[in-house]
Length: 90
Image 1 (cartoon, rainbow, N blue to C red):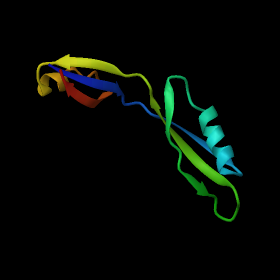
Image 2 (cartoon, helix red, strand yellow; image 1 turned 90 degrees about the vertical axis):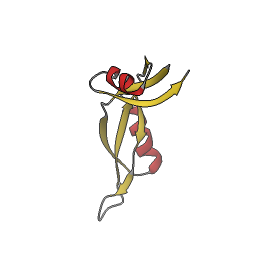
Image 3 (cartoon, one colour; image 1 turned 180 degrees about the horizontal axis):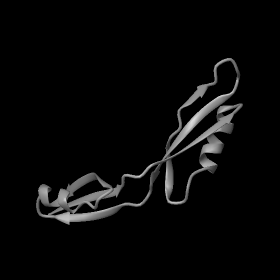
Image 4 (tube, rainbow, N blue to C red; image 1 turned 120 degrees about the vertical axis):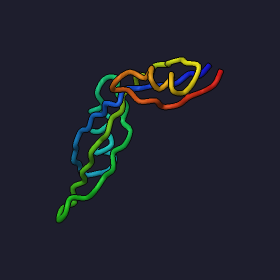
């Protein structure tokens, strides 16, 4: 028996600017949509200024398990719009 962990493929993004890394990070954390987690937020300096800019990428926290006897069947059970994250054998 195989058990696969799946999650929605959906991602969300949010742009912020700030004067310090701490400010930018806090804005990204505060902008986290319900049911999502901040996955990345690379920071860059705006040309000719001291302003920092970042685009936060958020991934859904919803996960489900799907079960099957073999990999082709397991892949076929992954719902549309979802992705297979991991597989374990039990």
